[in-house]
Length: 217
Length: 218
Image (cartoon, chains in turn brown, yellow):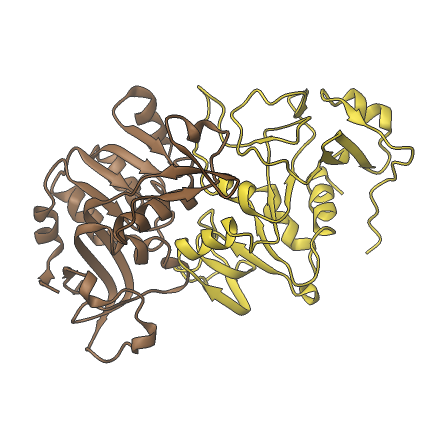
């Protein structure tokens, strides 16, 4: 790990126009303090790669409400009418990706793979413009890797070298996004001394984490 | 019994001991209410838990334990928390025994459309395309008609969720099983005639000699 940051330092590192992977599922397991700091610094023209855009005024929904987002790659915007309205009026472009494909594209980007072959989306709108590849008589869509400038993660516990452990349904996209960006910033509900998180409980090893947010208070 | 309860109770009969089952948001989620705990079924929520339990009493919720709609849930003994890659590996990899989803249209080929109404509603497919592609069994739970219009149609006019033929459709009027020979009418809702079902259905139905009423003894 390169060092700890205040939320404001982190938001200052993230330039307008940057691409961000933001973990979370309807705001659960999302880095809320990082999101608040991006809104506070009036970030603009962001590309956001995330499972969903949560709901207005919550989680990633705060970035949408603030007009910080230009492009979204996501599986679901159904619970955020502001994302849908932005898409219709043209202020936000949205690429919809099946959820299982989204996580695999991120995994491919993070794990050095040239893409993934999936049957999901065959024969639907998702197939348009993509290569279909036959393997042993079965057909698959070739889905390309995704990477971003930053991954913004949320953990239940971190230690001071940057190991991360997650709680229950707050895992979601965190472990896979930890591999798929040039710079990885994590915030944690608690930061504990090195050695307190048992090695078997570490889901994201510290070598993947560039910066940890300083504790809230 | 109202029509949603009727559908949920009939779908619950399809869930066998030991299955891993994913229930969609809305009507499908009601199915869990009619699956007895002793059946030993694990429910998966695709946001990352196997062994989804009921909503906890107020004040006992954990903000890090929710279902795919973001609602608070509990976890049953034997539950496991998983990340999204594992969750969709289970779904796509054939490890999920059954998924129950809502539908906008099902057609004579057994194709389902349930994620988009162009120009009106574009919520995104979420996990639906993976679920319909990968689950061992796909059951659609929905009202037979919406605003007087049959949702069982000759050919889907809305964008498809997958090419896969769904395995069963349970509505407030009927149980229908799509097959290579077309949509087979398997059961009638209590007190509903074959004629009434035909009347309410745009698609052609294959009607066997015997079409029993749904049974709700248990």
